[in-house]
Image (cartoon, rainbow, N blue to C red; front, top):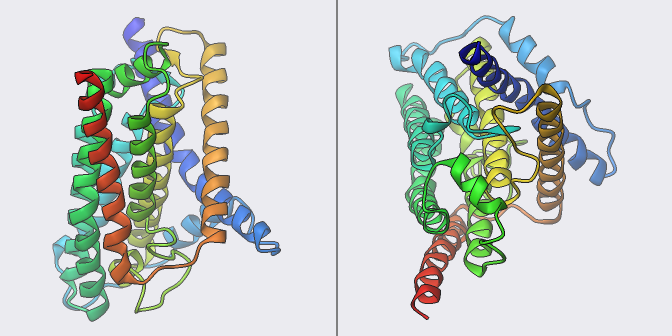
Length: 318
């Protein structure tokens, strides 16, 4: 019975992140529209868009290979697994031993790899531009992620997310400048990885600025629906990751009851709402930067991660 209970809880988290991902995307769009004094589409519009795309036929380019057809499902599977590994309402679940920051970074790296290959596969100019820009962003985002992981691991003595959240809840951590630096760095990486303003604008298809949209421009039908759902899952993953590490309040143990699970889920939804509002506010008050300034933006995240690590070593030596 204990195994069945653990499987049900783990499966519940797996389905919860899948169902909540489009809602978070719709919520961010709605808040941005209201901040711009527009009515905006309903919050459930991403669900309607996915249903519409699933009903359409797939149009494939003449030069598309098997990789172009398989890549959307690989991208979706890796993103879903990574998002489901991050603790949402409970810690120490059945597969929590796999919820490792390095494993999540590796899954996101594989997503980026297949996305770039899919953009290059058809041979269009837009796909090549988007893939090259994606690799440029990855060359700076991945070192920044590793430095952030290294800093958090030095504080928590572990890279496992359940252990990190438990350590962050303890009174021994306190307020640390190094954690504040890596928090800002992780937010910068999250903005770049999700192709949000000021790095990219997900609402436009301008060939001089688009990154993510350029790589998926040739997709249609169910393939495009799967990729769009994976993009929503990626946004939810980063918001959940920031909440799990830096604001772990509300997380319950895996052996808690149903009432505790509901309270933990409510706390998680509240964190998603706060993250969505802050993201919409940030994208409203800031302008899109030029592509050539993106390395400077991501370089700041790398320097913040490096400074966080150095501050930890200096404070231990005093």
